[in-house]
Length: 427
Image (cartoon, rainbow, N blue to C red; front, side, top):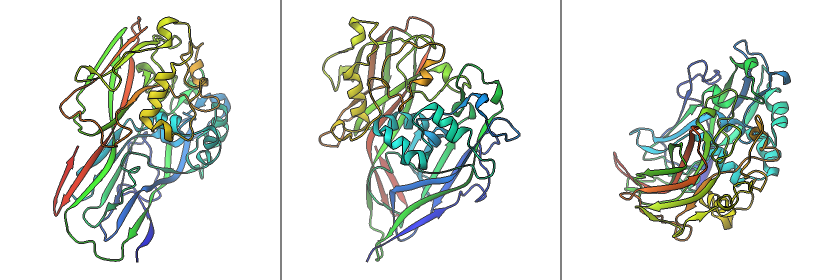
């Protein structure tokens, strides 16, 4: 008879109760789930600990006058720069998701509702429905002794596959890279002098998970393990005709989605570098997308037509084009299965802001702007891009020298073949 067990694992490269922070030079956290005659349930992986925010090197708790903010729409996830899964013994890569905090900003905005952020996500992941709520409940309320407790699922392709991982053949190594403090913290206005030496810190970190004991030896027969994966790409655009071509190198691609943010917002204490926006030609002016085309080997795919947006005929229209919004959300989660979301005409609009107005569009939820396309929502087997390039063509009103970053995420299926001491990843 099979039995389930809960594991609590301390970091392999830190003391169990030690403080961990980017500022103090220990931004890598590694957990090891050892080999055993059990199977791991990847969806049960949770990171647990206490989260502290300080406005200076003396560990002063922030106050309202500091104007210190953190991304209220993703809470603790803002601090995680990358997430990696490897086999413990051979170090074969299962999945590595770079720019993880930006991915979570896009994913959570599309798949969670306002009630989620007010309720269980506020308790477990320190989400907040608006910036003021976040400042009062998380930023300015961080006790210098206990901090803000959290327990977050490590969402990725691997952990969302619902396919138990055989620990009897290889253990799993989970590695987290923390984000710079300047990417996590930013000013609610244009002045960051009150927290220029501020930083965040973790303590009492643990990885908890669930494993299942099948009640009988699992043997040494070859194993074929199939799972989902998310791969990230980074590009910049700075023209009215943006052309992006990527060699994905994967044979079962299910979809692609991405979000924009001006490059000078990244690692900037006066800007939110994790905002999910449409392109801009200045910090306060929009650079609306007028036409969007996805290609496979130079041919239009999966749409055999150009997507002409509302802004092509009316540049003053601040409504997000519904076809772009739907395709973006469909690439993250199949649209027909999307039971809750924060995306709305308010959070996905194409907006010309005042001095720093984009920081306030998260009021009532989170911004959900982006582009994307699902390639296969029927068979689940994906489309072959192993030798054929993927491309994006955009016409937009980016007529000033103001580079925009595009964080692109590719959702695909992969197979891990384990035979004795040999491991092969089939992409």
